[in-house]
Length: 387
Image (cartoon, helix red, strand yellow):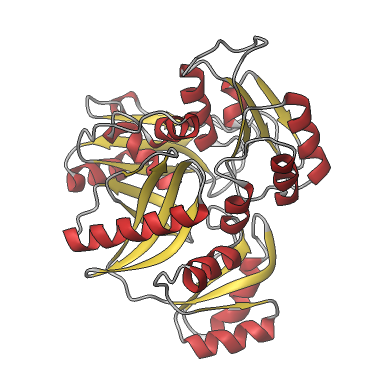
């Protein structure tokens, strides 16, 4: 492998399509390997814009606008970092010889819950909970009644829990229908999922470099309104359940193909494991790897993209907790007391240019035995404020 310097005629370039806090960490890891970074997002001064060599603001769902930037910059690798991207632009770019990570078809399948659920359950035969797809309020009422209550209702395209809700009774359906319109993506069709009776849910970070597949220790996580709030690593689970989870993760990522890191979400009941979703990119719950591993999920993603070896050391238990803003501001300030930076913990501030209620603005990371780390992470978050 030959490593170049950025801003040269022979520079290796990556383009991030989506430049949030996860993309920012990918950009930092790319800088460490001498890659030239181009960060693209729908709004100005997104987190990865701060650490990229060049940045662009564009409607990410505008096919021609996205293609124009790709053709102008001619990146060696295109890394989609969000779901709401013009998939047509990615297919066009791939047909023109550009390298989409992991590949345009995998992005197409995973950005749409209908595509990936049918691929996983009907083509690969992975175990999932019962589900149905609807596009009208009447259809939602009918399918929810068949699947039973409570049930989970999500737009087929969205991210970070936007538009997702749990209908606990038939009386909640109309409210869930309205919530779905808040999707960050496409709310024209919804997936209705029977509530799986599970003990816990995990993310299995799965990494492929074209030669081998490796797994990080399973990550446990807690979500609220479909969005990550707390995560910890490792999740305590039986060896049988872990083996089953790794088999499912390998099967779905082999099916999708390509290189990179995948966040595979699963439900676990005893030793039984159910596939839920997969993201072909670093996962928000995986931010805990910034403190638990010698190579974070972001570093592993870059290694996989470049075809480099995937070995790493798991240092030990840890936890993360997301700080979410409680107010809207065009000049947000995150008030972190210096006492929250200790010998086993620190805070990462995302530097988003605007805050609003519920927007993720920072993350607390703690290195300690899981229960103690999670308690400390919760305590840290409770002591961070919007200034």
